Amino acid sequence: MSTEETERGPRRTNPESPPNYNFSSRSKLMSSTSSSQLVADKHVRYILMAEKKKESLESVVMDHLRMNGAYWGLTTLDLLDKLGTVPEDEVLSWVMTCQHESGGFAGNTGHDPHILYTLSAVQILALFDKISILDVGKVSSYVAGLQNEDGSFSGDIWGEIDTRFSYIAICCLSILKCLDKINVEKAVAYIVSCKNLDGGFGCTPGAESHAGQIFCCVGALAITGSLHHVDKDLLGWWLCERQVKTGGLNGRPEKLPDVCYSWWVLSSLIMIDRVHWIDKAKLVKFILDCQDLDNGGISDRPDDAVDIFHTYFGVAGLSLLEYPGVKTIDPAYALPVDVINRILFTR
Ligand code: GRG
Image 1 (tube, rainbow, N blue to C red):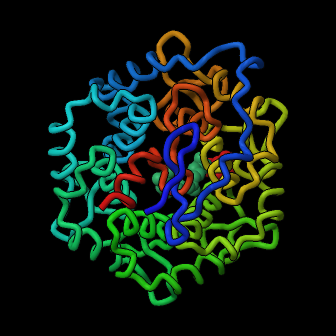
Image 2: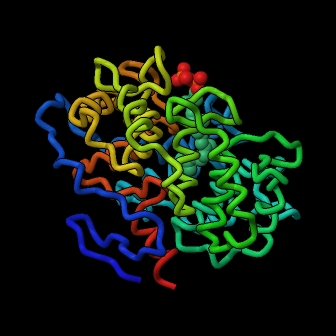
């Protein structure tokens, strides 16, 4: 492996590795325009408390997708350098109770497996450097078994097809170093068939471009070294038009801004090297304005109720914006860069 030192740690330069994103086009963070700062300690407390409130309405509603919630919360803690405050053994043994005979993981104990939760489980194990406790062959066979003849992926045995599942399969198998278990060429061809005239991507061929799907398609193309299929200027233009007057980003034309698009849009812009086309200072201010300054947590828009999903995407967005004190996140794998470097380039 070859790496070069950057201000924020080692960065991959191996031509056989996933793309070496041009972080240099990201200017230094300008905090002067924000009235508030990131209340990191309060967000950490909010996440740790959310886990304890098992009887709350939010917990009950989220019960079946607890694996996703755990990934969002734990990744946020790691980005804030507080993963060590979590009882690791407890988390890992719960994650493993969610695995099925098929090799796939469910959103919680006693639920059905789905590719969505399988990626979250693998990502959680990656955060703790515990991929070794997995039967990698079994998990990767589950994921690879969801590929269809046309290269697309289903989410589970019920067969729904979506480019989200293409991304998840590719990301998951790449972390497990098992991409050779699928037909990557066909997987890429299917994703390219979901490209629209506006340069964006949808969930299936002909479906409307949406920032969330664009992240999935660009992320999958980045991981497989296939970004040449993207018209970077056209897509970059569509993505930077997602910024509205308040500085926030929406997911498609005429929609309201939402903190989560700070991740879906910004990560895509970084992967195609067009992040300098948006006003980063205004986006930082928008994210900081969505914080609950008293009790921690981040909401979709200023003054709305906070939740763990938006807390993660707010902090992850700030990471992409190089906000001081937040670890660097990899825009394709959605895990801290040090975690990805450790997994992909040290053994
Ligand atoms: C590892 C980060 C990571 C992701 C895993 C699940 C997944 C892969 C990606 C989901 C991508 C996606 C479709 C995100 C969009 C989520 C969202 C806020 C949808 C809301 O859609 P609408 O139509 O909202 O309700 P708008 O904003 O268009 O009004």
